[in-house]
Length: 372
Image (tube, rainbow, N blue to C red):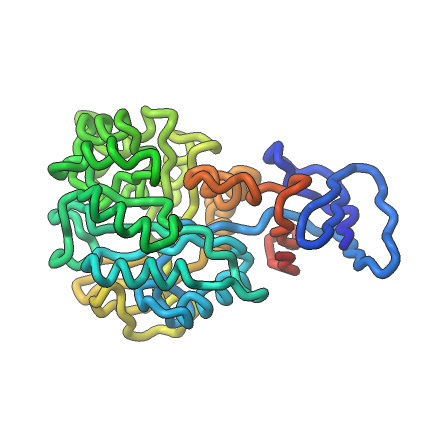
């Protein structure tokens, strides 16, 4: 396949006029020079289009009526099909705070899954719990909150076939720092669902935690006397931060502030979507708790936000509309999330040798074609 005349988002994080050749699912040429079509080769003239890498969502729970915690191959398949249809070519779905037995079943189901041609690739698992603060559970079930347990985490990693890439942990909880210290070579730890102050968060980052779970949400706010997790993370150049950009969780001013604090190289856009994503308004379930989709938001009965109903492609478009430069927003849904979980080797940029996970869009980011 040849893609010619496109405005290509390159590994330099900017748009350049390039031509691309794809052979057997891999990118084999990226050049400004004219490429001659081989016999029988499909040619796509992208002269009026943008050409960007396939998107990545490293934190979402469900979509299309299914949830990763259903622990069924059908759920993974349907979720992966929906995600790919929206331009998300690589996924790292998230669990909830559940029993070890349930989490083990989820991990084993993911390990056994085989990716179909019409699916986004399952490249990891995000354990959002159970090592969180009982005082900041958000929409999670407090019954299953546990103190950090390296041996339990080791068992889950083994059950997943090494798919576990990211683990949410509350830095202030007893045993958190020790767990980070002992397991940081095997997984990436993310500060979240926490009451930690700045010093507690900074200590966790110093020990090796390098990520923040949905910045601003389920943690103390940024204060000039106690900057909290937000301040400690921004202050450490090794830490990357997730942001839910559905237009509901976070005010546009706070979105722009986060990108200013962390810079283009450390921000990650996520959807945090639930099974209500891609579905009509109504009653759904998240981690065993009923949730309600209405007016684009997903909430518990008391009004607490409980994940989102948006996919990460729309989060990217929202960020651009909120004033984030398009090159920065694209980086936050392609290169950065893969960097944060150590998965850049085969994907994330339009580079010779990498998988051909490529999207074609118009100038307003209406999705025109998915190549993956």
